[in-house]
Image (cartoon, rainbow, N blue to C red; front, side, top):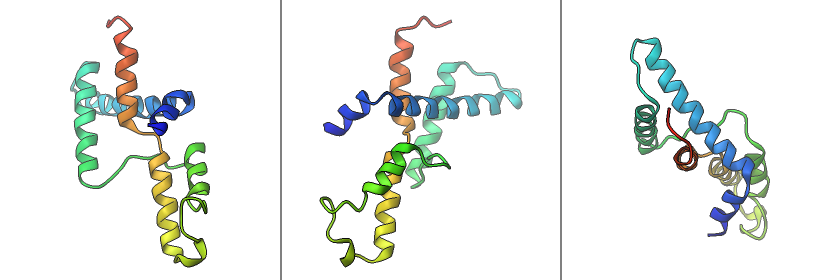
Length: 127
């Protein structure tokens, strides 16, 4: 519960989620447009969501190439003594997996962006 509340309260995180979602949706729409297919924003959302869900089903995740501030903070906190057993007892590969997992979990999430974008779109007239 706390994590969800922090995500909602942190506008930078929410905006990064929305920006990630909109970039992915726009890339799909632009790619189709370049090939002669015109689709509206709602169809682009559905197609992009389906495509990204299929990518995640295969075990992949869309994350930024350059780590965000949130990702860098998560990497630093991954070996926090309060959360993990002594780092001295753990192999270096395990520590790297913890850091990597923390960074991926802190990365902007297109799913949150999709939901936030829907919430923002509901209040605005379509046109």
